[in-house]
Image (cartoon, rainbow, N blue to C red):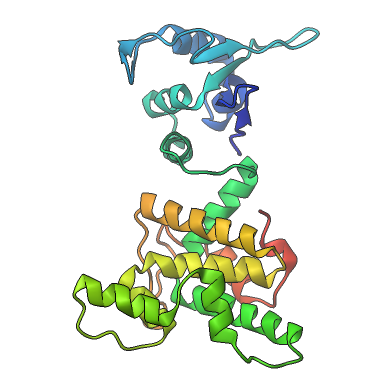
Length: 266
C-alpha cells in the first residue's frame, strides 16, 4: 500500500493518520485507542523528549459529514517516529521512505507511487546489464533523431550526464589514481560506482522521451537514494542473485524488454 505524502499550505510535508495506520497493517478495531496513544505519547524530537505539539507535529483533519474514524495530519518526522515504534511487520519500508523525506531528499513534484517506482528503478540499476541496456536504448533514440547516425554520441551523452572523459581523468589524477585509462563507463566506475546508477536512470528517462532537465533530476535523485540505501553494483554478467533486496526481478525483466513508455511512471 502506498503512503501518500501531502504538502500543507506552509510547505510542510504531512501524512494522514488513517493512511499511515492502514499502511502499517495494524488492527482496524484498535485505531481509536492507538491513535490517541500516538498523540499523547513521548518522543525524542530535535528539541528534546516531549509529547507531540498540536499544530506543529499534528493537526485534526476536518471532514464534512459523518466519519467512522477521526483523522489527523501528522508531520513526516512525527510519522517516522510512530512507524519506528510500531509493531508493524512492514514498518521498515515506510520508515525508510519517511527517513528519506526528513533527511532532505528532494522529491518535489513526485507522487508517492512515482517516488516508490523511482526507488524500484534505482534498485534495478544496480545490475550492470540494466545500465547497459538503458544506454543502448538512449543510443537508439539518438540515432533515430540523427538519421541513423551516431556521430558525436559520446560528446552528446557526456554533456547530458555533466562530465567529459578528460574531466573524469583529471578528477582521478587529483585523487591519486595512477591508471586513468578506459572509456567513460570505466572512468565513472573508478570515480564513483553509484554514478553508473545515475547514468542508467538518466539514459532510461531520455530513452522514453522525457526532457533532459527532468531526466537529470531523476538521475540525481536516484544516486542520492542509492547512497542512502547503501546499494552496491552487481555485475550480473558474472553473477546474479535476484533474491537480494536491491533487485526486483519483474522490473528487471521489463527493463530488458523492448522499450515501452509505461516503464517510467515518474
